[in-house]
Image 1: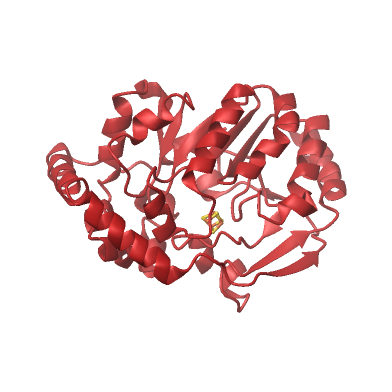
Image 2: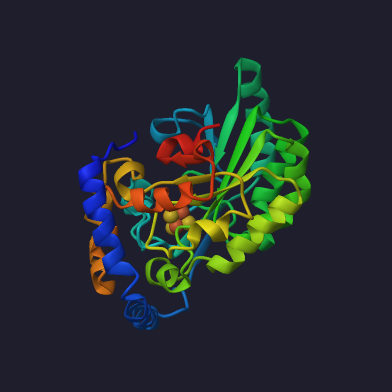
Length: 315
Ligand code: SF4
């Protein structure tokens, strides 16, 4: 769903956003650094469990209704982003352990997917979103190679379309496989902001922004279709759009209010607003805030290459 924002209100909020961000950039950076220091840079110990799933392909529903299936190589996610709404879903709440501190590794995934994929393709078009409730490039993927094994299966027996949603530079390792999908794949690289101190404030255990930008460069050099996904949109600089322009030919902007699957309620329950308040950037936590980033993107990207919320994730 795309939120329509009135022009008058948009202008008022845009002014407010600019006032809150740019003139105080140094002060905000200092607050964010202090916050990152408080948060610490070492994640909690992670508990890994091996599990053999009954199924891997799940029906695409809700936000992913445009897909026939979603595919999650892991359960749990060590990036543990503060704003991650999966924290509030049964997969997390029934676990009894903090989101970000555990990961289940799905054993025998390749064999299971091979069978399921054949069956699904015999019934019609297969479009796959990987992944909806974890990042398919968990740090443990370096060793386990579950995601790589799934890509091998899909490269041999391709679905009609595959979207790989990640924020990890590890996706570069699989360029050889991704190149076999031609135009039937898109890597959607999350880049919520261009400001590393903002990333550390909201998502201290996720990969650094410069590494993600380099990954987009590598994907472009290899000819792999990709987009920069500004989601959830975090406070960013005025030059964010210019930074992205040489790296991608399409961008997607999404925020908590459009993209958390509950009109922003899940995010409200997580009290993410307080993280903005700590930096004096509450104006960025607003349903109209994305319009400012959208206007900046419009100056450097063709309008038909800027996607809003769900449309940016469609096959
Ligand atoms: S990377 Fe995605 S799934 Fe993992 S914690 Fe962050 S938002 Fe949640």
